[in-house]
Length: 203
Image (cartoon, rainbow, N blue to C red; front, side, top):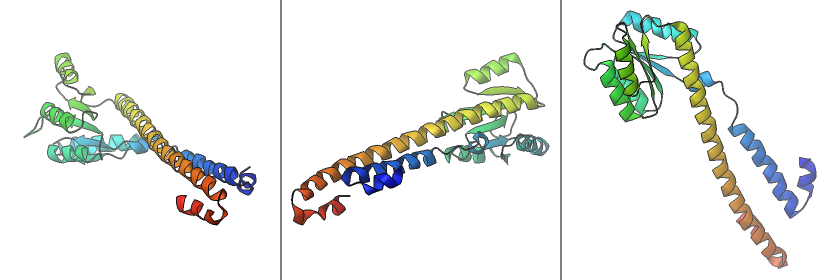
């Protein structure tokens, strides 16, 4: 029990601290809904389509960011705010394929789903070869959209957990390094009664 460990001397104190670290590890990888880890961007120059798709994504439980400006969508990718974009093919200034190329240059791990009302097998294969996550015909099938969102959300949630574990491991390694220093100080101070206070400085 933690209370028993706190009553021990040097070894007991160290174990009590480890108990706290174990608690911190659990807190660091606290379970978060995968939906909360993914913020999709909807990119379409048609206001009606933009509103419809944003509503559909919202019904599925995700908070989307709608925009008709490809540059704004790219900025959302660069900032890390959006790791998934539903992009229409036919847009003035920058079409969906050009946007795909730019998005992948900004973040090779971003998920770009190309949407079009002119779906063909050849265009779908071309988009996938260029790095698109999927190529969806309009009107968008809700079941397929749901599956695409869930797969991406699960992937990003997994990456978030891995990053949290890696960060916690680094913190644990740093902690154990300091513990070794503290043990050396404690050994030195206990052999010389007048230096007992050095353990506080080392810790």
